[in-house]
Image 1 (cartoon, chains in turn red, purple, cyan, orange):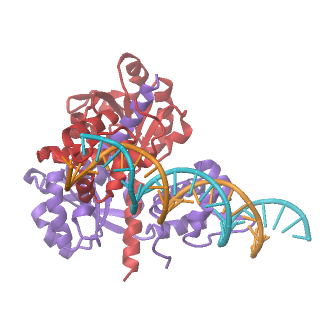
Image 2 (spheres, chains in turn cyan, red, yellow, purple):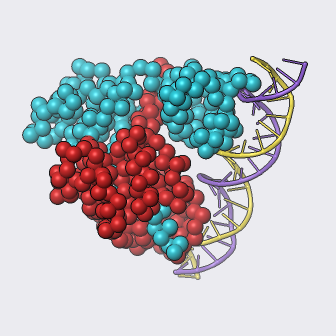
Image 3 (spheres, each protein chain N blue to C red):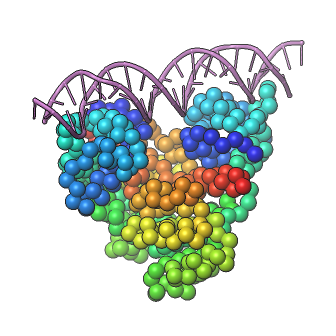
Length: 214
Length: 214
DNA sequence: TAGATTGTTAATCGATTAACAATC
DNA sequence: TAGATTGTTAATCGATTAACAATC
């Protein structure tokens, strides 16, 4: 459909456009110009038009953009027009928090199973989703359609488990472990890292700079 | 100490340097050149040297960088050489997961209290940290030293609570709600957004592109 | 000293912003 | 038609990479 080679910076911004358009939709706003949207989002109108034109001409001169249409189109670009089965490997607090989080399911990311190493978690359910033992993982992957694996294990275990995942056909990992899995896994495996501790450190950096001002 | 005006791109990379240096330290590596580090981290040696030189000359010609020293210096830059008291507002699954997560505490981010609106959570403890009711928040902020507030409430509640936080002196918010608090709060309030759903959408985007290839 | 590697300046590349012709 | 606003090209800005003199 649309070209590869879209810059990472543009892709990072797409979900934010999608969110703002969703809010406009809730507010029953029918159309919006790049100028108005730029004011709300605090980005330049130029950037909005450039970004969108990477994927196609979604607007109309003299009118602007139809909110419902643009929301829908960006949704398609992001792959939100269909369901994605997800499993969560690591049924600790964070894994369970993700399983409990309804908003992912509402965007089409459906958690179908959890996995853990701890025998005491076997058979437990979270939001009616069962916790399996990690040695059942290969079998499960071969008998179920799983697109995304959320990996919420400590680093030490995550690296080894990631290899097992990839060996059994997994092509997309949502990685919460403090390690850069993308560097150790084959290039055709998509890794999206969520490094919470790094986020907290950036906050701490800014806090420290601010305190120095005084 | 060091200059303001360090680019956002550089700051984003600092925690990653810190992590790699920590691992080298664990492996008892004493010194490392920008060339060796660049190979491990898959960035250019030039970038490493440029990044570090924003903060000072930490290396030595002909030798490279002393791992322990550099790790320590970056830690100081990130404000990791001291403790930061944190409270978590929103004691749902995610808030509790953060409270349970020991690695933050180990980096000096100490969770001292949780807050929630739900009366049934009052007095509950997570990792020996007590859950308070949200109406006690102003009083608590005035009588305790709190540097960071992790905000793990749904968007609808988060916006209003953020105003209360700021009105009571909070200057740094680690925001997990799906909204850009930085746009509604005063500029002197530091907001670090963690938008998990946006991260998942980027994963979905890449997955969708990959499937189109076939 | 010779070799290695930094710190730093200069060159390149990419991303953002501005400008404006096309067009609804 | 006139006005508004896009799509797109050109100009600017900033970030990354390359090169090399300084120096340990």
